[in-house]
Length: 240
View: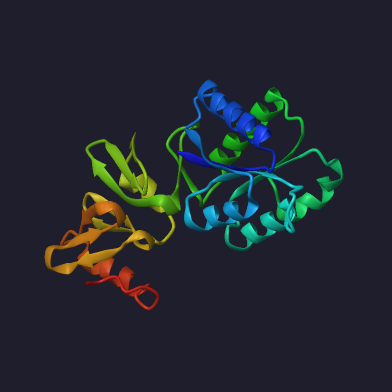
């Protein structure tokens, strides 16, 4: 599921945009939700730092000492791949906005058809991108960073993320070569995202994640898994 964050200092516009997006998600069967809305750009920065965000709709002109372009540039310092869509009634910001590499620029008032066109292009772009999302179908995407582990269950693959569980038909042999090197086979039935491990209980070969999620280490894969763990031990103390 894609998480959308909206930030605009006009509460009425913000509410309308959120409602319209939610309707378009349903209409187009997009697996997405508006997970955050605020009139305060500093609250948006805090949310991006602490929560999963995939797409931001951001006003440019705020009644504060900082504007939307400044906010976008700060976000880009740590989130290079996040989709930013500017919304503004000040067309003179059009050229300046591209410094932050936005996906689109929507002039106010936003027309529903224009917004829907942007969403369709957005999902098409994600579908055709590589490295940041896993596509379960052309409407459902999982951000790799949010995955705890992938479990093989017969002909199905089960993706345990920080917030949801997804299922699709597939095989380890096809998906493993498409993943970044932080995804490691740790068991005949599990591929784990090393970056999201909270701790490892070696006495019972159990890998733990936030929220009581866990998977297991198999004897055949234990040596190669521990070698991969050793590569990140300098940055993170995982084994307890």
